[in-house]
Length: 177
Image (cartoon, rainbow, N blue to C red; front, top):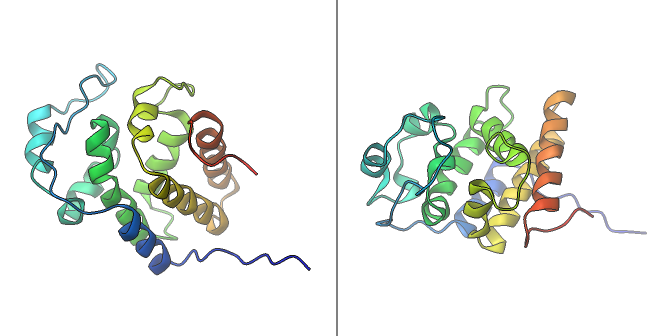
């Protein structure tokens, strides 16, 4: 008989994975990506830099994360590595909630890579290529768990679409089984 142990999708298990894979360190590099989607966002490097430069992901204010569900899309690749843990943690804070906007934006951005059809050269794909295999596995595990607990068939389809898109279009990510 095949052993089919289900992965632990509890909020505590997900938090442990985030803590283990997204090291918290003070970030002093460039926060804003050099090139982002023109005209779609009104945030300036000074704003994002002032908010995040010299900070570590575990110290970002929850109110900022809730009000800026997708600011990681504007960040340089090194800043995504430094700060994405905060958004993942906040998504887990709202685990199982129908109002989990941060998880919704993460799913949407991974499914469409910033609103455009998947493209291996896009900014979002470039940002995520810097993530370690452990960080990528954590994101995929979080998405798999989200699909498992999602009761809405429409949202579940979105999550599964994000998983497929990531696995099929980003080199180095685990492939669909």
